[in-house]
Image (spheres, rainbow, N blue to C red):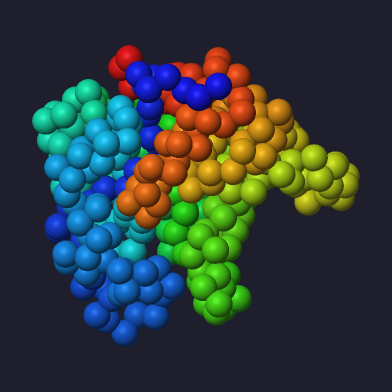
Amino acid sequence: MAADKKMRRIATEEAWSMPEHMAAILALTKSTWDDLDLRLPRRSAVPNSPLYNGLTDDKRRLEIMDADDVSVHLLSLTSPGVQMFDADTAVGMATLANDRMAETIAKHPTRFAGLASFAPQDPKRAVIEMERAINKLKLNGFILNSHTNGEYLDNPKYWPILEAAEALDRAIYIHPRCPSKHMAALYGDYGMYTALWGFQAEVSVHCMRMILCGLFERFPKLKIVIGHMGESIPYNMWRNDYIYGLHKEWGDVPGNLKPGEVFARNFWITTSGVEHTPALKYCIEVLGADRIMWAIDYPYQVSPPSVKWMNEAEISEADRHKIFHGNAEKIFHIAG
C-alpha cells in the first residue's frame, strides 16, 4: 500500500552550503594539492552550476520539497565540510556555517532542521562550538565528514568531542568523504574515489575502528548515524562477530563488545542514496525499523525517485512511519 500523501517526510542527509564555504573549497581546487576530495568540486561545484545552486539556493530547495511532498530537510554542511582547512580557518568557518544555518532554519522553522559543524582539528574549540550550537543555536546534532588529516575518531585525542556529544544527547552523523591519504592510492582510478566505492569504504573503516577500539564502552550512550543503508556494515555483521571472537582470543581487539552488539546499541542508519527495497528489507530484518531513517542525499541525488520509492516500498505502514519521520524526530530532536 502506498504512503498517504499527508504523511510527514523528514529527509535526514540533505547537503547545504553558503557562498563563503563554497568559495573556500573552490580556492583549494586552484592549488597544486592533489587530494581526491578536490576532484568533485573542480568539476561540478563552480558558481551557478546545478550542484552549487542546489547547495546554496534555499528558495529553490523549498520549491522542490513542496513539489515532492517532503516536509523537512535536515541540513548539513556539504562534504568535506571544514575538515580540509587549517584549524583556525576551520573553527571560523564552522562558526559562520552554524550561524547561517540557524538563520536559515529560523526563517522556515517547520521546514528545516540542522546538523552543526565543528573543527575536529582543534578538539577543545570543537567542544565549545558544539555546546554553542546546541544550547544557543538549537541545532539538532552534528556532522562529521569521516577522516580529519587521515585520522579517525578512535584516536583518543578526539574523545572530548565524543564526550560532548554524549553529554549533549545529540547524534554525530558520520558522512563520507573521499578516501584518506592512507587509502587514496587504490581509489584514485575508475571513479572509485566517489560513492561508486570509496565513500562507503572510508566510512565503514572509520566506524569499525571506533567499534573495535572499545570507545563505546567509555561512551555507552553515544549516538552515531551513518548513511547509504549503513555503508555496507549491516551486510557483514554476522561475519564480523564471528571473526571478532578469533581476534579477541589472539589479543588483537581492545573492546569487549562484539561489533554487532555495539552497532545495535549505538548506531542508526539512513537510506540516503540507496533506493533499493531488498536492501531496506534486509536492514529492517537485521537492525529493526527503529534504527533506520529516510534520506534523499539532495542535491547529489534528486528527490522524486527517493520519495516515490519510500512511498511504495513493500513494508508495513508502521515501519514506513518510523522510517519517514518517527525515528528522525527522536534521534535528531525534531519537533512534531
